[in-house]
Amino acid sequence: YLGKLGIHANWRTYDSQLKPGGQSGPSLFFASHSLNECAMDIRDEVEKYLPNYDYLFISYNEDFEGNDNVAYFKALGNRLTKHFTITHTFDKITGKRRLIGVK
Image (cartoon, rainbow, N blue to C red; front, side, top):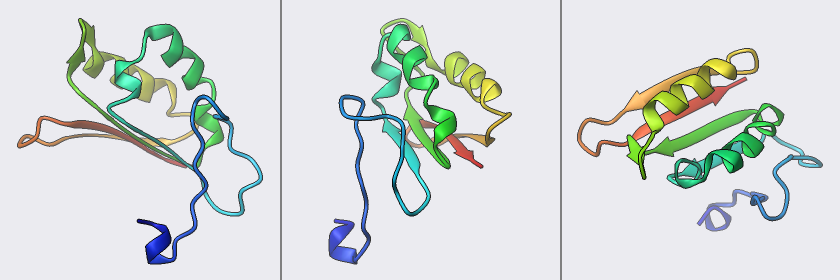
């Protein structure tokens, strides 16, 4: 879709490389209902790389398999405030929550 609009994007996945490098523009960490479904040890590993990005967009559910994601992502946002301006959003219609970080 982005290519059809003339927008060039490089995609990185957890399996390939979480640390951005070599790109010519700003970097975005995008997780749409994926990070909130990971085990805590994976979340801890991913968190180490988040300060390397220019922007964060993390969409999550209120809870997943007994994990209180609201509390987790609020705490994550607090830990990231030295690197980003953090905003938390909640869409009352869909019930979706987001953590947005901007350097």
